[in-house]
Amino acid sequence: MSVRERKERERATRHQLIVSTARELAESDGWDAVTTRRLAERIEYSQPVLYSHFRGKREILGAVALEGFAELTTALRAAAPKATADRATAAALARAYTDFATDNPALYDAMFSLDNGLPFADETTPAPLHEAFGVLQDHLAGHAHPDEPGLFVEAFWAALHGLVTLTRAGRLPAERVSDRLTLLVDRFVSR
Image (cartoon, rainbow, N blue to C red):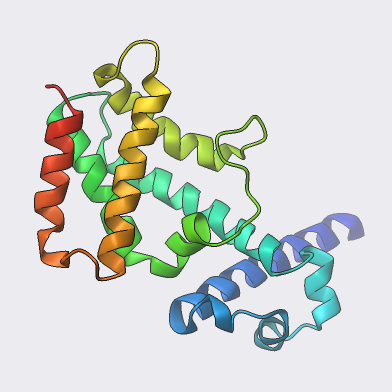
């Protein structure tokens, strides 16, 4: 292995350490506790080393969010492994989405609630975001008007996000999540 390859591997390892540590801090203490100073202390590198990887907290949030979208995609694919477009599949996707948000609150915030700098619904949208949306689209587009399957999936995703956000904020009782998901799927999915 060349010196250059070793340095690239070390840099990639440091990069991942920063992202993982930011996630850990956010899950335990909230995103306000994630500062470059605290991260530098935790990973035992100087702040300039941290800034050699990320320009600031926003870019760190973006890196965490990208990991989150990859994990959400995995969870959605596991919930609907077959290329079906029925109610049971839509319900499984909705449950996987809400479970993911419940199980990973700080990660979910990095993905959807905080300024992570990632463009959504754009030509420059990163692949992990497209892939998560694509899983939903693969299973739900058949229920949409043929000219606007993306719009239909956006509305379904927005409804899920709204349910998650309102439940997490205590505006909707958590014990009725399943009832709300059933109602949502019944209204969106035709068969």
